[in-house]
Image 1 (cartoon, rainbow over the protein chains, first blue to last red):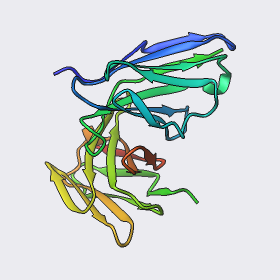
Image 2: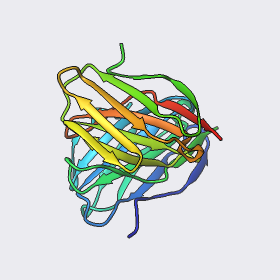
Image 3: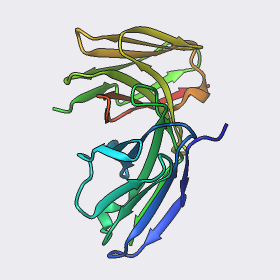
Length: 113
Length: 107
């Protein structure tokens, strides 16, 4: 079946612009996660959704970052007024529920110039 | 001190060798994950375990909850095993990641 998909695969934006990143989880997966991997750095947790609600937003780096999930499916991660330090690969993962293994999407590579 | 420590950071092996990657953590967890990140960047979940031992093909993962330690073993290593292996520990809501082990298996 279809895996987790993300779009766009690459995004180049100017500093100060807003960007939206999209994640389509595996159908039926109730849990959805956003992570970030900066160049040469490890993975860091951003936010977790169970259904449409986000019980854990503790990883969002600043109030410029927000995320939503609608219909228990698609999620968007929005970064307002992008900064160069936001440049990273943004990864989405989904799981059947929070106690199951996570399936990762291919990521969106964001470059802020 | 990081909450998740992996060792070694880099590992080069000859094809056929037995490989061990270690992970130690300092926080309470509900599960530990081993992930594989290929050179192209894609991430695959290898194991999720909360106790004991799991085996998939040539891969074996063990965890000792009391010692807060896990190991990933690869038997009969092959060049296609070359990748970054990442340990992650989690509560039900989020994962905390180790810095990864870069494995290179030479033919």
